[in-house]
Length: 118
Image 1 (tube, rainbow, N blue to C red):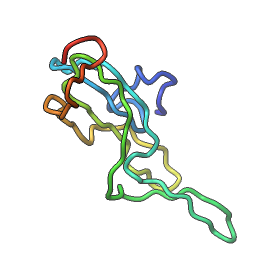
Image 2 (image 1 turned 30 degrees about the vertical axis):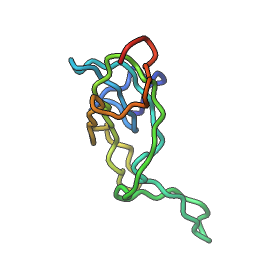
Image 3 (image 1 turned 180 degrees about the vertical axis):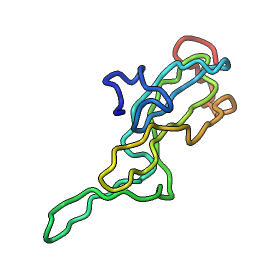
Protein backbone atom coordinates (compact mmCIF):
# COMPACT_ATOMS: atom_id res chain seq x y z
CA UNK A 1 0.00 0.00 0.00
CA UNK A 2 1.05 3.61 -0.34
CA UNK A 3 2.27 5.70 2.59
CA UNK A 4 -0.32 7.25 4.83
CA UNK A 5 -0.79 11.01 4.89
CA UNK A 6 0.88 11.33 8.31
CA UNK A 7 4.52 10.36 8.67
CA UNK A 8 3.85 9.14 12.22
CA UNK A 9 1.60 6.38 10.81
CA UNK A 10 4.26 4.75 8.59
CA UNK A 11 4.95 1.09 9.42
CA UNK A 12 7.63 -1.30 8.18
CA UNK A 13 6.19 -4.05 5.98
CA UNK A 14 2.85 -2.24 5.69
CA UNK A 15 3.52 1.02 3.83
CA UNK A 16 5.50 1.76 0.68
CA UNK A 17 8.04 4.53 0.18
CA UNK A 18 11.07 5.75 2.12
CA UNK A 19 11.40 7.31 5.56
CA UNK A 20 13.75 7.70 8.49
CA UNK A 21 12.88 7.29 12.17
CA UNK A 22 14.67 8.51 15.27
CA UNK A 23 14.39 5.99 18.10
CA UNK A 24 15.27 5.83 21.78
CA UNK A 25 17.14 3.13 23.73
CA UNK A 26 13.90 1.10 24.05
CA UNK A 27 13.43 1.29 20.24
CA UNK A 28 10.43 3.62 20.59
CA UNK A 29 9.85 5.92 17.63
CA UNK A 30 10.40 9.57 18.63
CA UNK A 31 10.29 11.14 15.16
CA UNK A 32 9.52 10.07 11.59
CA UNK A 33 10.29 11.90 8.35
CA UNK A 34 9.36 10.83 4.82
CA UNK A 35 12.15 10.89 2.26
CA UNK A 36 12.07 11.16 -1.52
CA UNK A 37 14.10 8.32 -3.06
CA UNK A 38 17.18 8.66 -0.80
CA UNK A 39 18.84 5.59 -2.35
CA UNK A 40 18.65 6.89 -5.92
CA UNK A 41 16.47 4.12 -7.39
CA UNK A 42 14.42 6.43 -9.67
CA UNK A 43 15.54 8.37 -12.73
CA UNK A 44 13.60 10.28 -15.35
CA UNK A 45 14.48 9.24 -18.89
CA UNK A 46 13.38 10.75 -22.16
CA UNK A 47 12.20 8.49 -24.96
CA UNK A 48 11.74 10.42 -28.24
CA UNK A 49 8.66 8.34 -29.07
CA UNK A 50 7.04 7.91 -25.64
CA UNK A 51 8.21 11.12 -23.97
CA UNK A 52 9.52 11.41 -20.39
CA UNK A 53 9.22 8.30 -18.24
CA UNK A 54 10.38 7.20 -14.81
CA UNK A 55 12.72 4.21 -14.71
CA UNK A 56 13.71 2.23 -11.62
CA UNK A 57 16.93 0.39 -10.88
CA UNK A 58 19.08 -0.85 -8.04
CA UNK A 59 20.13 1.67 -5.39
CA UNK A 60 22.88 4.04 -6.43
CA UNK A 61 26.12 4.48 -4.57
CA UNK A 62 26.72 7.76 -2.77
CA UNK A 63 25.64 9.81 0.19
CA UNK A 64 22.59 11.83 1.16
CA UNK A 65 21.74 14.16 4.02
CA UNK A 66 18.61 14.31 6.14
CA UNK A 67 17.79 17.17 8.48
CA UNK A 68 16.16 15.87 11.69
CA UNK A 69 15.60 17.44 15.10
CA UNK A 70 18.13 16.89 17.89
CA UNK A 71 15.74 15.34 20.40
CA UNK A 72 16.71 14.24 23.90
CA UNK A 73 16.87 10.45 24.26
CA UNK A 74 17.55 9.63 20.61
CA UNK A 75 19.99 6.73 20.27
CA UNK A 76 19.52 5.60 16.66
CA UNK A 77 18.27 6.55 13.22
CA UNK A 78 16.54 3.82 11.23
CA UNK A 79 16.14 4.05 7.44
CA UNK A 80 13.28 2.29 5.62
CA UNK A 81 12.77 1.96 1.86
CA UNK A 82 10.70 -0.02 -0.61
CA UNK A 83 12.62 -2.21 -3.06
CA UNK A 84 12.71 -0.84 -6.63
CA UNK A 85 9.47 -1.91 -8.36
CA UNK A 86 9.22 -4.13 -11.41
CA UNK A 87 7.84 -2.42 -14.55
CA UNK A 88 4.11 -1.66 -14.24
CA UNK A 89 3.98 -3.07 -10.70
CA UNK A 90 3.21 -1.11 -7.51
CA UNK A 91 5.83 -0.38 -4.86
CA UNK A 92 6.25 -3.15 -2.31
CA UNK A 93 6.10 -2.35 1.41
CA UNK A 94 9.23 -0.76 2.87
CA UNK A 95 11.78 -2.71 4.90
CA UNK A 96 14.59 -1.58 7.17
CA UNK A 97 17.69 -0.91 5.06
CA UNK A 98 19.93 0.71 7.66
CA UNK A 99 20.31 1.47 11.37
CA UNK A 100 22.75 4.11 12.59
CA UNK A 101 23.95 4.53 16.18
CA UNK A 102 23.72 8.19 17.19
CA UNK A 103 24.96 7.86 20.78
CA UNK A 104 28.58 8.61 19.94
CA UNK A 105 28.05 11.46 17.49
CA UNK A 106 30.48 14.37 17.79
CA UNK A 107 29.17 17.58 19.38
CA UNK A 108 30.48 21.13 19.13
CA UNK A 109 32.09 22.51 22.29
CA UNK A 110 29.45 23.90 24.69
CA UNK A 111 26.57 22.40 22.67
CA UNK A 112 23.30 21.43 24.39
CA UNK A 113 20.43 19.80 22.45
CA UNK A 114 16.98 21.30 22.65
CA UNK A 115 15.38 20.23 25.90
CA UNK A 116 18.43 20.36 28.17
CA UNK A 117 21.62 18.40 28.79
CA UNK A 118 23.06 15.97 26.26
